[in-house]
Length: 356
Image (cartoon, rainbow, N blue to C red):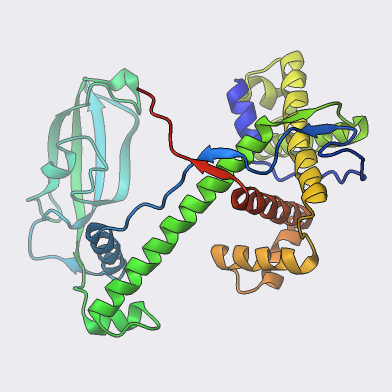
């Protein structure tokens, strides 16, 4: 139950607490950090992009540009998308979740238990037939069904043939703004995948450096007012969650979080302290390391976020965040990003320790 609560709180965007300047080498009235430069973290190297990676990405792009046509003059084949009605029965009795009407299914997608999709191949529109199958053992989706026989009555109502285009120079011109040939496009894809791998390695390094910093940080005391504000913020989010599910908060706490009032208050306080510690550590490092968190520096991060999330501009991103009341959260996210950049640039990467 505690992990469930923690996972909910970890995803919250909460307001930052801005602390006043305090004296000390790398400490203030609330936090002491024993080390923030030269932190030892496991070395991160970007994964190599293979020819198979490139071909897989190219194939996915070709599939994304597939076309489909209705088929009426033949039976279903592997790779077709069929529209079906089906009803499942165990011991002659229908069961919950075992029936559907006008369900689309791509044959060969392995979306159903073994034998279901294979059993549809060879049947034409209008045919109704039974599939005598057995649920796998174990069956994680519903352990009660594990290893049990089942009969599905299936009616094929439509067949669609999917046409995946080959990668040609003509298709490349629709996929890329710069490449005009297949080879140019594959090189563009390789560079794109390499950038992604570099970015992933960089993010792993930043995360590791931050974790190392937190291990070197200890809270001397929590400011009471800010801690209460943090608890109120998290409590507000929990109440919004309850409203989303259409239940009173007490019911949400008892049934979803599986906590009594005493346990909930303990976990709420713990979560608020953990989040507040992060923000206090962040602010202290910004102050002592003199990290640039000016409007210009933040705007550069906002530009990155706008590109990553598909917004047309920083202004559009800010407008959306403001509409959700999360503009301050966006600022704190950018500040945290800048701190993690600093930590990654000033850490010491070491080889992974041999666990044997």
